[in-house]
Image (cartoon, rainbow, N blue to C red; front, side):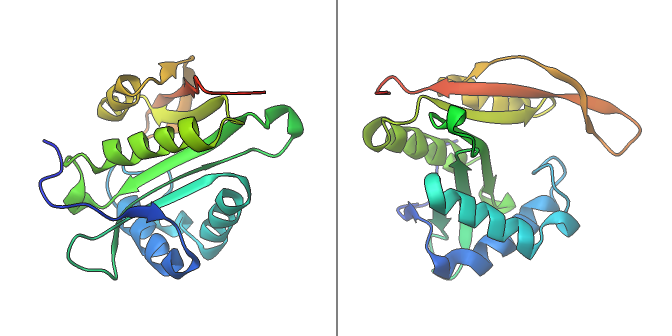
Length: 180
């Protein structure tokens, strides 16, 4: 099902969004399989690093709640890794959507806008990379629909915290408008 409500506020992150991004990550970390980090691992240091890295050389978008202007329901970011040999790559792609808004097309819309932004405004970027948990088949299917390709399988990388381990799936999308 696509977005039923009017989500017309996908926009660039601003410094005024910091506390809402922090709260959104805390909420999503409580959802089983929501993100790799636990609620306790969502710290000021983690959020500050993500915001700083995305602001320096990446992309950072947020989604405003359709009726509560003081709440975010989605966020996506990615950024360059650092060494100059990776200047053509945006990595560490992470996306979170509030539980009440999952399954409504917000994640797909965020990814489409992110990739469109790269195609039209970031011809310095060739690759966008992410890693998806093997059991998150819905996310993997979405990424594939939008042009991401599976590039391998990192066996037993994720501790499922129930005595089992699962693979991480590295994926990449290639920008057809890249100019070196």
